[in-house]
Amino acid sequence: MTLLLDDRSVSSVLDPASLVEAIERAIRLDATVPADVPARLNLAGAGRFLRLMPAVVPQSGVMGLKTFFGGGGVGVRYLIVLASVETGEVLAAMDACYLTAARTAATSAVAARALGVKATRLGVLGSGLEAETHLRTFAAVGDLDEVKVFSPNPASRARLAARLRDELGLPVVPAATAADACADVDHVITATNTGYGGPIACESGWLRPGLHISAIGSTHRDLRELDTDVFRRAGNLVFDADPEQIADESGDIREYVDEGGGLGGVVRLSDLLQGKASLPEDPPGDLSVFKSVGTALQDMVAADLAYRRAIEAGLGTAWDDLARPKTRR
Image (cartoon, rainbow, N blue to C red; front, top):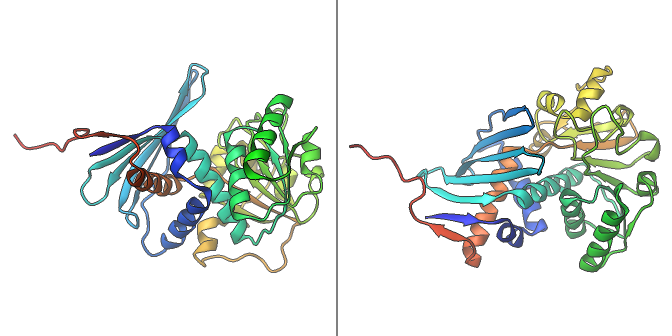
């Protein structure tokens, strides 16, 4: 039986705290029960974009593929197909829009924990779904006292602040400028879609020493959130994927490398959690930065959790004959 899950069903079963624990556990366990996560495939041009992200995750007993694609100027669509490693049965096909934003936020929280970040004052740049899931996640697993939200659209930032203020019971306030959102906080989250070669979302001069940045918006060559001096100031620079992959895909890191920045000091989140790397006792810079483009391991772990929770809750539509095994004639 294959379970078909829409975005509303997926979002209803993925609580932030459980997802944070699931992703951290999976990354740690990957050292002894490694997943097979090949390089993703990107196809772009002529107003369309397609990305394929496959993975086999023996520790969870699942394998699958996330694809996201866009065209016609109507935004990106996300889909995950999840299958059993043991039998090959297609377990689920699910809308992965909310799932992608939620697993990104959960991974940012895992990284912040690994870096020893203890933030009570949070600045969020962006008012879309990724900004929302990050705020929910850090409220669930952190100890927030104050949150400031900025996006260029005053109505959008006001709506997000009001909705999450009521939902979370926290003082979430809209900031008048991006610089205001970054002032007097411990942690800045950049969840934007600012353009490569154009205006950026966050400038180094706005960031006080000791601050932590979770940078998650620049996952494409045409997107850039941070000025390059942010990376030069990073005493701890942690990536969730291979540095060469991120340098190829992220406008942020491409610009930094193009200006002569080196990636020799980058620590992968997986190496940090698995004890293969450690942070310097005396960091050479005054910021810590986590740069994320997402991985198929994160996707499959989140999809497996959503699938199991949906089964327990009786959600989704069952399809009995999807992708039946080929039989000999």
